[in-house]
Image 1 (cartoon, one colour):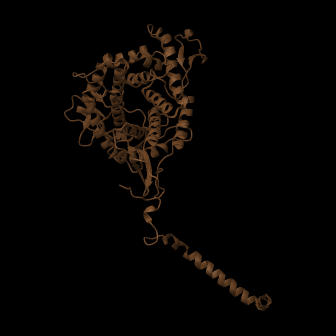
Image 2 (tube, rainbow, N blue to C red):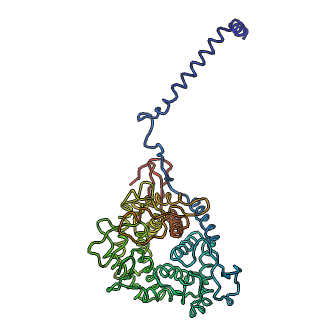
Image 3 (cartoon, rainbow, N blue to C red):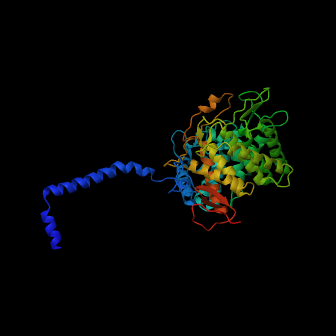
Length: 477
């Protein structure tokens, strides 16, 4: 110790400065070399295939908790924006005694309509989540609104003779004049009728069904059609606006004629509108055209694939049309999954990658494919990964308020691409909410029923649970 003290005392200020300069030079050298640290991971010292990619959307296996948080956010938002009140149109006072409903009575408006076809999908989504999770707030959302509509319907119906109903929503419910008014809501009421202690919805159901069977115009072979934008036009959307309700009516009544009508409509739509070369449906078909411009609009294809899933769920397996519809579903899903973008969503025009990525169609595909896997119709190993990818992308479209972003607004039919390319998107486009709810509910089932594992950085599905935490592993025979 004494020698060290003597040594330090002998050090001159010059020596000290020399030492400090040496230290400073070393530090500067290290700083200069620092950029090279990015090159330190190389092929010989690092498993580069395990580096994390810069995904635009989350990649990996979602948790049930993460899904529920998003669904809760949507449910809270929609519960606030869809009130169940009758009010006086002038004073805005609530009418609690429905016997006092008169020509000045209307439904209190929220951001969304209770009787639209989009909300028929919302009711189905809320019911599904309630069944899957046991959380009654979801089931109650549907029950409260459908019971409300059934309770006020008789009082407003009394006003129909003198045509004094002011609320357009009540017109849709009581005097439907288009498939948009009927099919989705009819199916929602039929499904709700199977809930415990459900009211008798028969009058409402039969009123909707009467329009589908007898009111809507048809081609000469009975295919449901419209005279817009041309005479005798088929809209792919109308598959969903009618056919699931027909199939559910078969289950509801036990009458085979409704099953037969549903199968007939699917076959006649598909014979004109399904394009085998792409395994997709064109959006529109006009009887008078020699050639049919094929625009593969995303959401219309969503309504079609959702129709096939809904019908197969209730159509008896012994029905002569069951296998044909199953085959069509598998072809359609094969065509859809081939066009999924690298971000997980699908494009507005499915086969045109320069059209924008759209949420509502993508959410419908998540629901339909996950449901088909959960029912045992599709192989999870083949179609599970793209379904997870799609859900992760859809989940990023739910904002902090519970609104669904990136949804194309209501869309007519056109025969040029610009019409579809430039359709606006809006958080108040009601078409996005039901599909996202259905997708989330069915994803919960998928996570519960299947075995997922990350293997070599990829989402994989397996036939059984694998007890390993290795990032990359082989499967034992």
